[in-house]
Image 1 (cartoon, rainbow, N blue to C red):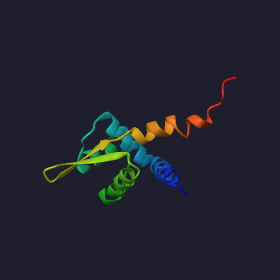
Image 2 (tube, rainbow, N blue to C red):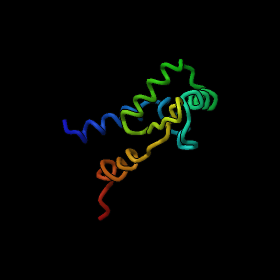
Image 3 (cartoon, one colour):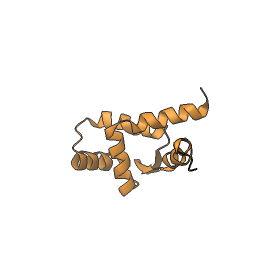
Image 4 (cartoon, rainbow, N blue to C red):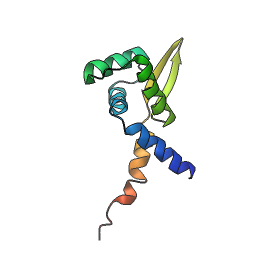
Length: 102
């Protein structure tokens, strides 16, 4: 399996969960959120009920897929969306599946 295949698998695994898609949605609306802010927004806006530890594991999965960037502000870890992997998927592998207009 090539590195591109592994990256694609990580991306699909990250996008294949409702909680993680909700996290992406919230970060798309407002970047640079702490764990507490993001957890609170996802729970209140999407009704997701889980522990902060479980939520933190979702953030790790998104970070490993390259969908979240981390910035430290003092002792606070701020999360921001990196949409580039999704845009590359759209212009790469998914584009190759489009019908050829003839």
